[in-house]
Image (tube, rainbow, N blue to C red; front, side, top):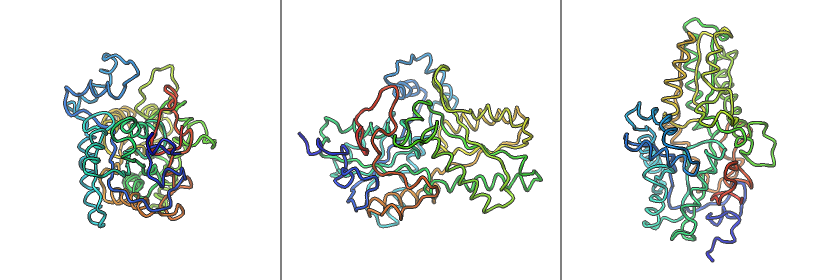
Length: 394
C-alpha cells in the first residue's frame, strides 16, 4: 500500500488531495510539467502518430490516411512540437525574470517526447512535486480529463507511484492572458473592414473551436450543473466569445453591431454519431445569403497555430470564403505572445501562493474554474471513467 491509496484525489500534492475546488494554501512545487498533444515530425511519423491518437478504437490505416494527407501537405511535420519548444523556452524566460526557480519539463500524449520521459527526467533530478500545464484551455474529455488520465497512467503501478505527485493548473479559457489575442485580433480585423467602408452588418465574426461528440460535450464539466446541450465545453466557449465581442465593442464602438456566432470544426467521427454543430465551412457558405461581405474567423478554441488551424481554417475555411465571394481574415492564436506567457506564469503563481479564488484573474462569470476537477467531470462515453490525477474520483 502506498501513501496515496486513500487519497481523495489520486497522485496529488497534500493540499490538492483534500479535494477542495480551489487550493488556497501555498504548495512548494519543484517543477512544471508542460503537457502537449504531440505531432509527427516527418512523413514516416504520420501513420504511427495517428495510430497513437486513435489507439484502442480499431481504426484501420486506410482511414487514417484520410487525415494523414493534412500532415503530408506540410511535409509530414506538425507545427505543434516546434510551438511547444518555443513555449517552453518562453516560459523558462518568464519564470526566470520573476525569480521563480522552477524547471519546465515537456512531455506529449501522442509523440516524442512522451509524458513518461518528462516525468522520469523530473524524478531523476529530484523534482517530484509537479504542477502540470496542459495545452488546452477548456473542459471536455479530450481537452482536460484525457490529460489527467495520462498523468495517472504514467504514475499508476510504476516506480513513480507514491513518489511523484501531479497537480494541474485550472482550465484557463477565461484568463486575461489567453483571451487577449482574440480581442486584439477581432478588433484589428473588424476595424480594418470598417475602415474600408463596410458596415457592421456586412461583417460576420465566427468563433471556431474543435467539435466533439455531443454525448461527450453533454458530460463536460461538473455533473451537478445543467450546462445545456453542449455542456460546460460549449458554455465556456460561448462565454469567452460573448466577452470578447463586448470588449471589442468597448474599445471600438463602431463594432457593437457586428454579428457573431460560435461554430465548430475538425469533426472526425462517423456520420451516424452526433457532433457539435454548426460546421465553420457550412456557416461560411450561408453568409452571402445573409448579406455579409466579409468573415472574421477566430480560433477561440486553440492555443497555437497547429494543424487544425493551418488546414481546417487557413486552407478549408479560407477556400469556402473565396467560393462564397467573401473577404476573409483569420485572427491570431495566443502562441507565445507576451500576455499569454505571462498569464501562464500568473496561473503558476496562484498555485505557488495558494491565492484565494476571489483574487484570481478571469473575465467571465464562469471563472475562475476549478483547480481540482469535480466528481464525474468530463466522462469518456466510449470508455467510461479511468483513473485520473488532479481530480476527485471517478
